[in-house]
Image (tube, rainbow, N blue to C red; front, side, top):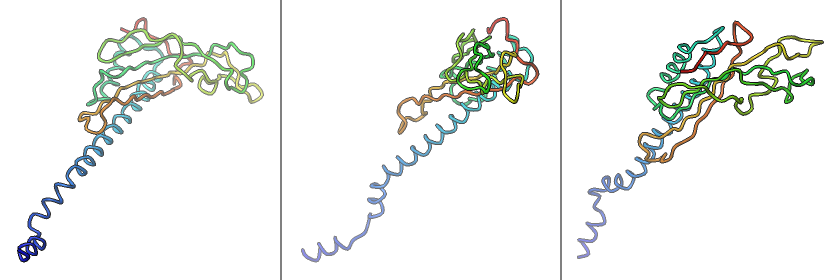
Length: 206
């Protein structure tokens, strides 16, 4: 009997299989965790690219038509691929200086702006007229640049404007093993018009 117990204690048959069975759950967790994190970071980069590309495309024009806006939104959707565009809301604004404050010289929090036009696309639906109020934190004088300088200080009311593109996206993991709930992502990008002080908007967005 003692000899049998000694042989059992010295036996290592199947040891590797037992160790692998113990490590397998940890390895699978690490695998899915790294994969899902990489996909989420790639999606986050695409969301940022959508905002910058949409704002830049509009800022290059003197005027945009309904067809132009459709092309911009199509380009934005292509950038998001293979992630589902159903979960994205993209809004493009033209915000101009409303020159309502005499204390704007030097820029700062006293500067404000108003939306001249905006278009919005949600999911795979058609574009529509967007919000009439600027997105949060888009009113600063450092964003809507002045067009003249007086004694080295910027003066406002010269028709300066900025194109603002915002995107919100609800990212969902394709496996949901580790990231089981949606992750809200958003990005805002500002671009100054290249050719004109203010980009003329479309007659309609759809």
